Image 1 (cartoon, rainbow, N blue to C red):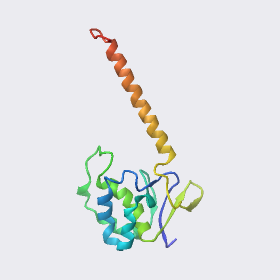
Image 2: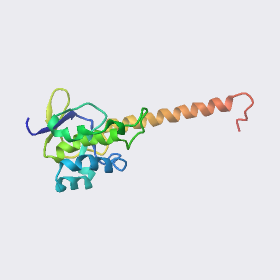
Image 3: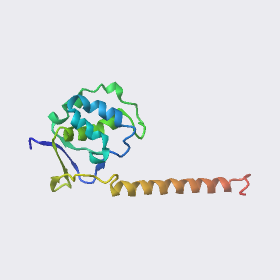
Image 4: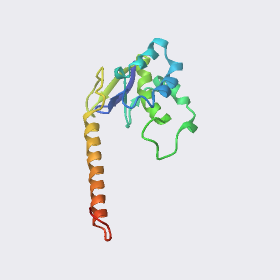
Length: 158
C-alpha cells in the first residue's frame, strides 16, 4: 500500500481532458513545485491522465500534501461556476499529483478494488446519460413555458 496514491469509485474517473482548458494553468501551478519537469510534461497530453470527479475518494496524505497548503480565500462563493475555479483544479490535482509522483491508482466498485484502467473514456456513460436527460428536461420545460405563454389571454398565438 506504500505506493498507493488514490482509490476512488469505479465509474467516477474522468479523463483529465474533460473541461481541461479552464483548469490547465491552475492544475499545472498546483502540481509543479512537487514534481519533476518530466512528470510535469505529462500534462501536455491530458488524455493520458484523469481524476475522480465530483465524489469522495481515499488518498494517502503524503501523496497530496503539497496541495494542502492552498489559501482558501481563492475559493469562489456558492453557487460556483460550472468550471474553472480553484476547487475544480484541486479536484483534478488531488488525483493527478499522486500519479505524477509515481503512485498507483485504484478504483473500487464497493466490493472489489482493482488497478485503475490506464486510460479513461473522456466522459463516463452515466455522465453522458445524465447530461442527455438534463437537456431533455430543459427542453421540455421550455416547450411548456412557450405553450403557456401562447395560451395566455391577450396574446396572439401566431
